Length: 295
Length: 296
Image 1 (tube, one colour):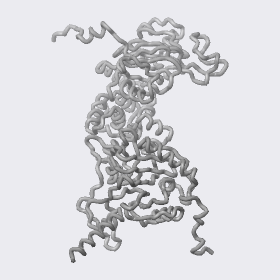
Image 2 (image 1 turned 45 degrees about the vertical axis):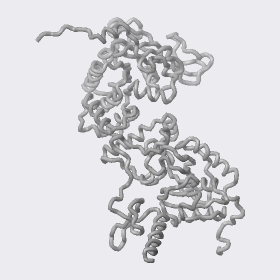
Image 3 (image 1 turned 90 degrees about the vertical axis):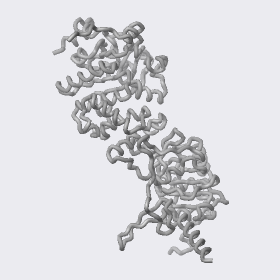
Image 4 (image 1 turned 90 degrees about the horizontal axis):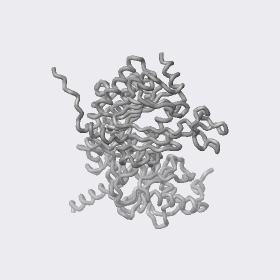
């Protein structure tokens, strides 16, 4: 059998010529606590720590900038308390940010700072522009409703009111994440952890969002199930060309999924670059520690 | 010993229509706000009344704050003019206002009702006041008031839709009987009070004002005349009212009204009769009238 030479399609060359980032985040900061005159702006000094000595407020995320391109996977690593979860929850608008801007090129041509949008617009964005998979499936799923109903909720929020079509789409999505169609009307509480996570992924993908946020998706799953979920995420990214932000403390997950990686510590980005570069040749002492602690 | 004379409280000691003028004004102000925002639940300071909360105090406060000396009142309880609840409420209003009351739907200017809308179409100059036990249509799917208020603000009604979807998945049909949720003027989701689905289409583009009062939950809401009121439905699962095909009222023979099912205790036979007793009586009277004229 002849192997076809790898050719770039017209669309591919075009997108390379004028590549526009899907997501642009600038100066994202989040403070917990009342704040005082000493901590009105986040310090960029790593040694200082992120807790204000005077009022005890914490800058959980300090001035993060990044860009994410269509179809790209960005990994975010860091120890617990480094601000990973706060960052991703801010991006999904679960959390009000203190400072910063975020634009998405598919929403109003990237002209609107999503953090300042009205509550109704934010709801639209959460349903159409982004999908989120939480570490704890109890946060992302309604456990007592059927699995297809969980997907239906997203579709209904996007104004689909045809039960037949909703069920068609739900079974298509569940099939994609290898949940047997015969169990589509079972509540996720009947499912194993890995299956629940896959239902969550299919729910997040219901409205074909260009951006998927994954917060520690494989934490707490056993190794073989982890591998399956990771496999699924990879294949979804290839098939649907979804851009993803993957938050994990597990370097193995980052190595397998991410094209680029940011290393977070005490709310600061201490290092960022291509994933293999960071893992093979870490520059920052903390990253070095992290990589060398890998068993 | 109580005698017939002193058994009733001294009505002359009370203001016209029981409530003081300040309270009535507050309720009217909240009612105006409710009319201005169709389907939106306006909080109000529910007053103490000589009947318990949850026994029609919301509707009663609306009635008392709106009623004037020239009004004519009709009170119905699930279509019935002479059940205990309807009679007590009617008597309280009568004794504290001295207004006339009626069972005839057409004669009343104010109609306070529990869980039914009269079969006869109302006129523009009539006001329908409904008693509401639970004003929040989202309460069954979301227990927190803070969250449901935000959901109304954001028009986030997917949880309620999900309930309907789950019904279809489980039972093949939407199983909500009474209090079937409606969308008011494409904006607010509203509980129409536990009226049967049969009455839902009557509120759509109705030519009269409907007021909803929940005394225990302290909320007032309204449907002004000529407002769009659409019962929730999926494109492939249309909204349906109760069906009484092959059944007729045992008194008036009606086949176009909402029927109550009753069982004859001796024979065990199922019987049907109009739920709206005033309408049924009116029809019976008309039928007797025609019989008489036939006889002549």
